[in-house]
Image (cartoon, rainbow, N blue to C red; front, side, top):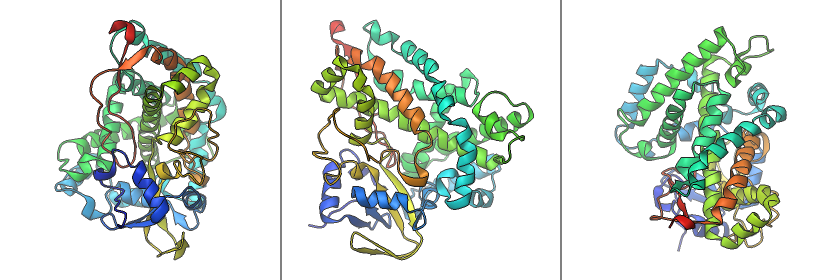
Length: 419
């Protein structure tokens, strides 16, 4: 029987890993007819696609996440988009011309990344560790008192949202807005709003975000401070991002940085609860936490897929792929490929995870990988000793509604002494 798989459909989302295995074994380059794109599932092939930006352009990241193919959009989406453009006064032709960092290649990508890197130098990232530790300690207070605790809502969400807000110099009162805006972006790009009728819902929240960011960029140009936005718009630099570039970058930071870290922490905690031997091992040997982070990234990748446009007729795994076709590079499948990792469906904190593709590979390797690793490491160093004495409560919650990111909406635990 032919393998059926559609990368944009929620039908395959709950547990895609058995299906990924079938794809790798039977159809390593699978054409998904509903989405109209080729799905690449083996580790070596995904790595090749990510490495060869000359053959596989990142332009598809914008086209797919902004609504292509049109047949994948639900009723009312285009009307909601029109309202968004009117409210924000954004020129769609300008946005299309000035694509975001994840959607350009070559010299412009190198230029944009070089500017943005100024906010993500090793010294800048390392300087955030004391603040990350303080936030984690404060968020774990309820768990330490024996109160019910949601790993997602009470730790995995507040930590990256707070750090991103502070990096951008945003007032503390807007941090709840940042999470709401992040959720809306995810829904519009890869979830329910894309399939349904957004009207005054998520797309209007995204409108508020764009208006807020445009105001913030203009304010920092007039009155720079010691935040990331000020670093990036500093006119004394040899090159600056324009207003559209800046807004697109912060949108990218919200989704990639916020959602990746939230789901990395949540997926790691869930894996530990479902593998008590691994939990006890890390609790006994806390120096294994960095290895835990890497295995969590491999085992249940927070970002499951990235998209590429084929720049010229090519062949991959024996399949001819025409110029202009869209590829879905399945990171989640590549990280479970038995050709790259022995017993890949086993969660093993002693595993050699080198070569996993959770943060991508090549020129578009995740800009915020070091920050995500720092936040996850600090969070799990503090959480693991508590998890040993906790149990899950309540029903198993649903997955986040997104074809892009993978994680649980909630993960409720309670100290066993409180039961």
